[in-house]
Image (tube, rainbow, N blue to C red):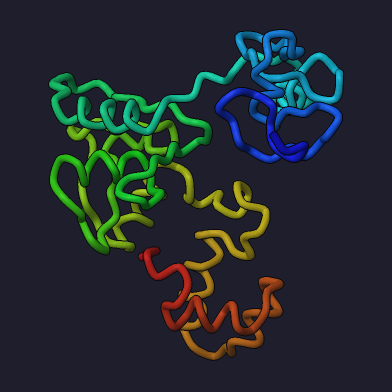
Amino acid sequence: MSDDTCCTEGCKRPVYVKSRQLCSRCYNARPDAPRCAGSGCGRREQLRKGLCNRCRLRMKKHGHTERLNRRYPGDAIAELRQAAHHTSDACVIFAGQSARPTVQLAGTLMLASRAAWILAHGDPGAYHVLHTCHRGDEGCISLRHLYLGDHRRNMADMVEAGRSADNHGERNPRAKLTADQVREIRRRYAAGGITHLALAAEFGVAKGTVTCVLNGQNWSWLS
């Protein structure tokens, strides 16, 4: 047998560390190979630190080596299908890793509520999947609470839910104008006698911001 070939019977893989006379797979599979001490791991220990690379990173990030409780893709789809047969008027909360949980359906990452609608009724296209319960941020996927709407209806729904109401400027520090200010700008301009530039200076925003508000490019959903 060549010195560059694994000495395990039936194995012909190359040997990268000649002092071992074993390929990487056979070297890691030997009975006396040091194993990771992580919770339920069993992988090969790395760098003589008692843990494999995966458990070492988990320990560094979370302070423990236990696996996070993550559902498999098939389990997530099964949970979404069950929501279609939910008969109660109560919300069905789909727990996820973010405020608005997402799933991957047919190779596309989307909101869990939209995926539930697609599984039950088909692709809604350009329409948004909205919530009558206003608990989309919490992950409600009950089909009894879902309905379709366009972008304007989506913005109005945000106002009704309190996520983009008159205090929108306080909730979002990046917002330049609040809903009350937008109404006032439109009222002042409709009354006449004032320019875009004057309104921009008064409300402390750029002239282009006022122009977009008045021509409907921004805040078009606000009546």
